[in-house]
Length: 506
Ligand code: BG6
Image (cartoon, rainbow, N blue to C red; front, top):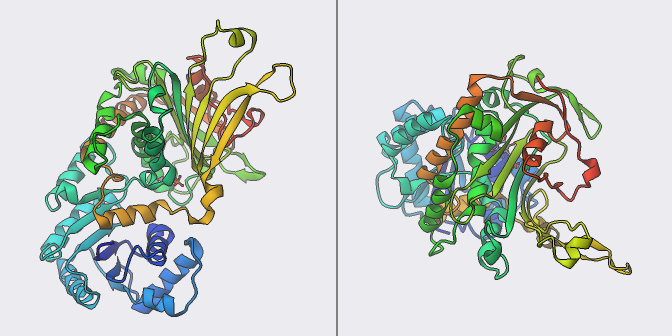
């Protein structure tokens, strides 16, 4: 790993505590971080270095993959962490920050590299970038990279404005926009499985694939993020980024080189091929939105979305969203990609299902039997693995054909050692590998697609369907797929009998 000073803005926040500090620790334990690094925690609150190191320790204890104890190894690690209270509107503070950074640079023999991680509200990105420059933090030898969290804007115009502010200070190649789904092991594995196996790529097209289904379901509600979520909703929170990114990875062409820009170029081509909606009625015919009401998950009583903190009691924000998406290119013409996401669904899971077309139904076996289609399933989370469903003879039967599964469970194999998305992303950003970060043109095209949906939804709300917490969302989500003669495949290998659908309509 190259040496760097990591400046964490928002160091007292949730993201730093849950994800970033534990990620630093895992990288350190796995010797990917080396010793030539420093981490400066920045937030408004005043904290001594010792208090900050205690905070870091607690977060590691609670969230890291490795156990930690206050021993010599801990002391050696903690020594790299310092804290500075900073008012991000005050340039003088940034000048002091520069002095601290330079001092740590010398202490740990870093050589000028700086990684600015903004775990902050996006409204602050422009200001911070500006002050980093004004405070002299972008001067001198070494690289200067900016890592930013989503959401990147609220729609295309706001994303453009944000991008323009950042680009006044940083070059595109130095901006690392995080979509943490791209850091997930199994999302990264999709390309490997596709391009490194002789038997998938020849079938990876509209001749053999009937449809592709992407499900990101969550059991949690909006927790303490009601204020943010009210203005975002499922479409902007998950659709514009994680879901379209996964779709692009499933649909992209093999890049000519495994180089970050070539890979991102191929994703951009997918975004350009998305069939945009021309009218509001097209949007309504191809999308479904829903909102959870009071219900029950695993015996626990769950309040409805409108009763959540910081949520308008008459809110029309969607907590569920499903869509039928087409990629209009030679490979995918005519193949629907169904995407769905929702809060307060029965299980937490991320899965991608590739449903293959059936064998011709005039062939002797299919004439006699009702054959199930072949499925290839990427299990991204919480279980990691790949699962292939095919037809075979039931042992001992007189030619009864049953679906059997070949299941590769990665989490079963490597268990605890699967790196967290943030470890991978932090590591990549420090190494200058931007493959799993989103480039501006991808972000812009994704907003362009999503804005059409949002604007049609904004016209009226009578198509917001309520669903009971703990069900699989509104029934209309099922109909969307059924209209084409398909159905959502059960996730997590769950029995179909367990799959329930919510009903109520507003
Ligand atoms: C975030 C969303 O990007 O992803 C959250 O803002 C969501 O609303 C989260 O809960 C889900 O991430 P994961 O990794 O738990 O599937």
